Amino acid sequence: MLDEEAVRTALEEIRPALQADGGDVSLVKIEGNDVYVRLEGACHGCPAAGMTLLYGVARVLREHLPEIGEVYPV
Image (cartoon, rainbow, N blue to C red; front, side, top):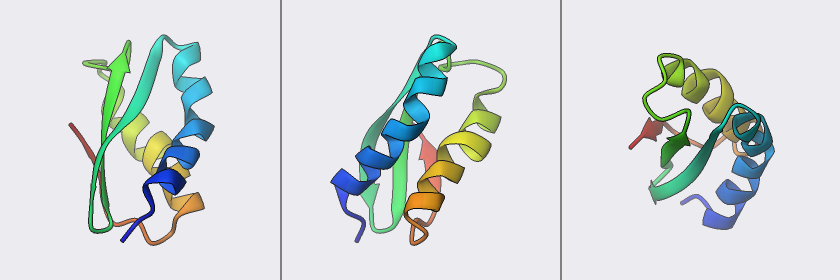
């Protein structure tokens, strides 16, 4: 089971880059080793949101917490 505080700390690393573009990310829930996040602000509905999730948010989370399974948008 993933530690919620560890996930939140890892998200803090990617947050400044998202906020610089008018977006943000929040943790919705953790189920087992899967993480559910919400892209907010300019990121919500952006055509590049899938790439942001995959190559930004998921990459950073896995760097900090290699045990993470999937990262899902909500």
